[in-house]
Image 1 (cartoon, rainbow, N blue to C red):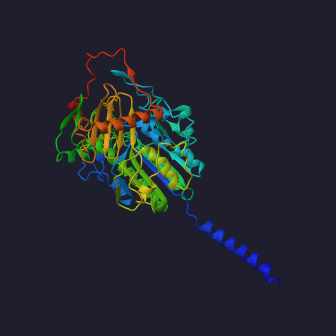
Image 2: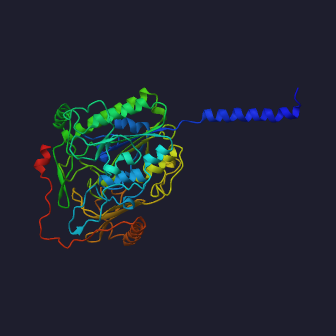
Image 3: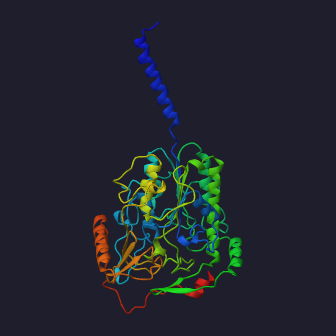
Length: 491
């Protein structure tokens, strides 16, 4: 029989081994992540934000019930490509050089600042960070951050994604290779069902390994594309909806009511597709360990290109610095983290997703990369009510939707907009004036000075490039006309 003094170390060693094995066995699996990005969807388009919406979004609304709805979630830009880049990099758009949609570059009294045509490969994208952390990655839909060597294949997705949506030379859209032919464009004009089917196949193939599925849909961007049967449904519904009503935003007409049947049909097809994605998670027993994020790349299109939706009571829409242009539908369901059917009123922005998702995935932060993002995990856990930093925007361009070059800052309740053409400013107290109807700049010069100083300092910090005078500008030339109301009514 061994001496007792030899048994004690042996027993302790066995105990530690068993304890370590138990700890290893109990370690939770990394959560899956499904990131859903709608295109041009207005904040007021979904039922979770607007019980009186003309549109029907039961699956999106159910997602809101399962998690946290951010009532002041913002995109990093009023148009698409810069916001998409902010999600992938955790940085404000001026840092990576994409400050307009690609290619952009419309001019007016000012010449637009340069706009890069791709996301630099030097950026460690969110997809690359998750892939390096052991995640399988998936992409299908609208990239709009560069083609060729700058495609999603080179930025943490793929390999093997193929470009195009049937349009020759179109490299905005990328899909996995598949032996199954894509749906008939007549039935799936925005490739919504194609994206969903590819995503469902990916989920079914990854029941055990953690995955990051990024689903940047084409809907509800123009041109309007919707199934005929759904359009007919909403044409019938439109008979009892309010008639068209119009306001004015500078030289542009702005839609004031929601009653656009083809747009509603396009949104229903998107919502139904999301229901299929959620059902695939349920079928594979993954719902309780899958984080689902939903947002739009910018606000709803209300001042141009058919004026398909209204953002009221929010002012303006896509292409504008007002709430209708940058406040977006923003939902996060993180089982075990978010309490169901909760809301958060803290202003947050799309740069914040990168550090938030890394923390939720149990992966180390990359502060040199996502330098403008703030982890929202304390907000998701309801342990904090503050993001801690102002929000900023820089759009040194003329939008297709009528907006002009501008910068903006949201600091607490206050929002300052600076128009670069004439250096004029607008100041709003957002909680008291969600429609941005009363410019308080003259009443609060000290607040204007303080916010403007912060905005200027921020622009210097991020290397923001300003527009320059246009030597060929003709002040007597007629502005480009907006789409006529009668044409918008036919859409």
